[in-house]
Each structure stands twice: as structure tokens, then as C-alpha cells.
Image (cartoon, rainbow, N blue to C red; front, side, top):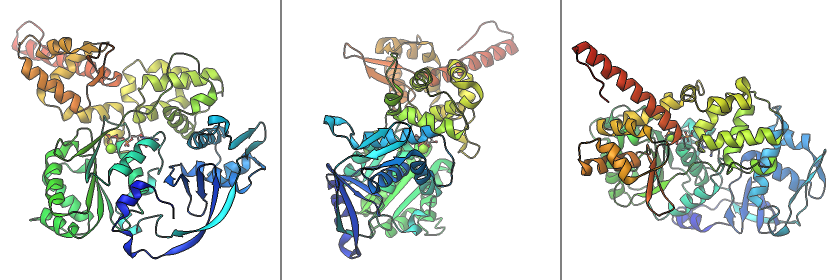
Length: 506
Ligand SMILES: Nc1ncnc2c1ncn2[C@@H]1O[C@H](COP(=O)(O)OP(=O)(O)OP(=O)(O)O)[C@@H](O)[C@H]1O
Ligand SMILES: [Mg+2]
């Protein structure tokens, strides 16, 4: 069995009991080895994350290597009984080519035969190798704790590299936080990571969604129940610690930001007594504790603007892939022209690669078209676009998503956040400090407020050309902050009118 370095690190100690072996076909081309029965692709021994449809397509092409495979045949292999638009096939072929580095250094694997289909043109060798049959998935009993495992993609768009890094680093860090603003894709990455590591923690991967936990005191109880330990109202932490002290387990605590103190206390206590428990947290804010390894998740890559972009090239950007997939799922159809793709690229750029915002915009295309959707982006209606009916409340609109973070700010942070909406361009520290201090002259407090907003991912910081920091609210947050500012002004005005005093306070 070929294994990569990170899996080796993590597997040491868990693989001792695995003696289930099987003979499987391995097809090698260039640095790649495909295990069709395992549905697994490796590059020089390292796992290559590929979406399940791209994998279906690759397996079909490799099976018929050297022959042209009809597009309809490929679509029926990848989508079985679902009728989908052909652009889905193109998106997946583009993703596959990107994963294979097709065309780099003149090496070709997948050739387009216009009007007919695709052909695998790489040199292949086929052999039978011994693999561990326990590698593929964790025991269903452990994964079944969360329906998310069933629905989350194993290889979400544009996250190959971060998944590889996280899987590799988890061997050295037992407390890992995936942090970033709302809707950027933290939960999606955590679930994909769990799937990727399911062979490494064969029976103990648990995912607790804490978004519904309103009371911090019930965090430990929620985890105890998830582990099947029952209702130990008095001492859930002790029970969990005892249970985990002898087990190698991966615990994912999803959406921690509103119960961050309780999560800090729980994870610290458990890590102190268990040497083989690993925690992956997702949160809009890091725990800020010793030994925490923080992964700041960036937005999905978007095409750079404003120059024109070819359809093929646009398809290689994960933000565009997510947009097209969601638009088609929502029943939208648009012409396959460079004009359409320029509009899609612009929408993705305007939404700054935030996956949730891209999903909302994509779902508007069936009603407003690409041009109409783009025109609406500048208005506050973008905050109110409705998401999936069955999504968590926080994901029903951008307003709800940003509102969730806004509610977790301190009063001073909220007031500063509202005031910062007046900056259209990235601002210097001096300008931001002046706005936050608001004439009080209390700079040390203003610095703490700025730090808080940055830590909670409500204010972005980037280096300017002069290597000095610049601060800005992301566009959706700025629209939200402006609305809040208007509302606060109106509220204060009515209070003032009630008291019969003149003036407006912000
Ligand atoms: N890489 C991706 N590929 C495809 N879809 C994605 C990707 N990342 C996120 N999404 C989609 O975007 C939406 C938001 O993602 P997710 O729930 O992971 O965000 P989050 O950062 O955990 O948000 P929150 O802070 O509210 O918990 C989901 O519907 C998810 O399916
Ligand atoms: Mg989440």
C-alpha cells in the first residue's frame, strides 16, 4: 500500500491490528497511480484529493485508454440517473486536468475530441498490488454521529492544498483550529479532512456541531452524548476524559465561536489526560491558547480582473466552479460565451471568493440572469438573498451570517465596526485608530478594539505597498455595517425626539 508521509505519522500505532489485505488493480501513468476499486488517486505515493465525479470520469477514461469516450457515456458514468447540463462535464474535466497537471511541461493525459468526447492519451502500466482493505472508511458507527459526513464533499473545490497541509500537520498538533469569516468554507474543509483521515482513525471520528448549543455549559454534555456516554450532568468532562484516555480519536468541534471559553476549557482538560486524542475546531475566531495550531482559511481563488478570460481558464478557478455548479443546480441556464464567463468572474470577484455568498448569488441567476445578478450586487439586497430552506439559520442569508458574528462583538467593537463602514478604501492604522477612538483620545482601547475586530474576522488587514498595514471591511460586511449605522442613527434620533432634545448621536 502506498502511503504519504502524514498518513504514516498518524497511522503509527493504529495500524498494528490491521491484517486485512486484498489484491487490487493499480494503474500507473506519469507520477500517478490510480486504484480504481479503492477509488483513490495518488501522486508519487501521496493521496490526490479528487471530487467523486472527476474520479468517475478518470476511471472511465483510463478503462478505455487510447479510445475516444463519448461525452454522454462519461456523463452517465458520473451522474448515473441524473440529467445535467454538459457544462458540468467540462467543469469536472477542467478540475481533473488541473489535478493531473495536464499540459504542464508538454505532458498530456486527457485530450478533447471536439464534438465527440475525451480520450486518455497517457502511457499506462497496469499491475495488481496488495492494499489494506481497512484504509477506505471509518466504521459507519463512528461517522454516523453526523449527517454532515454523508453530505459533505470529500474534495471541495480549491481546497486540495489546505487539506494536504492540515492532514500532514495534524500529526504534530493535537489542537487545530480552522478559522475564518462566516461562510468561507471552514466546516466544509473540516468534513473533507475527516473523510480524508477516516483510514487513520478507523473507528473514532466524531463531529459535534455546536452552532445549536446556546448555553456554553452544555458543550461538554453535547460531546458526552455524541460519544455515547449518556447524560452525565455532573461530570461530563471527567467522563469524556476517561473515555478518551485510552482511545485514538479525532474530535471535530464545529462552529465554536459563541462558546469559545467553554471549548477552550474542555479541549485543554481532555488533551492533558489523553495522549491520542486530536481536536479539529472550526470557529470564526481562534481559541488563542498555547499549542493551538491555527489555520486561517482564505477565500476561494477568483479570476483576477478586469481583463477578459477564456472559458477554459475561468473553469480552473474554484470560485467559478462553485458558482456554475450552484447556478445549474438552481435551474439557471446561460450562454456558454466569454461574455457570460466575464460576468461570472466579476461576480466571484465582487463577492471576494466567499463560498456562501457565491452560492447565494448563483441561486439568483435563474431569476435575474447574470447581468441582473451582477447589477444587484451593489445593493443591500445582496444581504437578503435567501439560501437553502434547510440550511442552518445562520446560512439563510448573508445578513444572517454576518449578523451572527456581529452579535458576538462587544458593544465597543460593534460601534467601531459601524463607524468603519465610512472607509471605502483600505485605510492606514492612524486613520482607523482615529475613527475607532472617535475623539476620546483613548488609543490603547482603540487598539484593543481593532485587534478584536481582526481576530473575529470582521475587519481585514493586509500589507500595503509600503509594507505598512491597511485595514478594510469586506464589501458585504461594509454594506451590513452601513445598514446598522443607519439603524442606530434612527434609533438614537427617536430616543432624542422622545426626550425632546435636538441632535443626532452615533
Ligand atoms: N470549497 C468549496 N467548494 C464547494 N462549496 C463550498 C466550498 N466551501 C464552502 N462551500 C459551500 O459554502 C457554504 C458555506 O460553507 P461552510 O458551511 O463550510 O462555511 P463556514 O466557514 O463553516 O461558515 P460558518 O462560519 O457560518 O460556520 C456551504 O453551503 C458549502 O457547501
Ligand atoms: Mg461552519
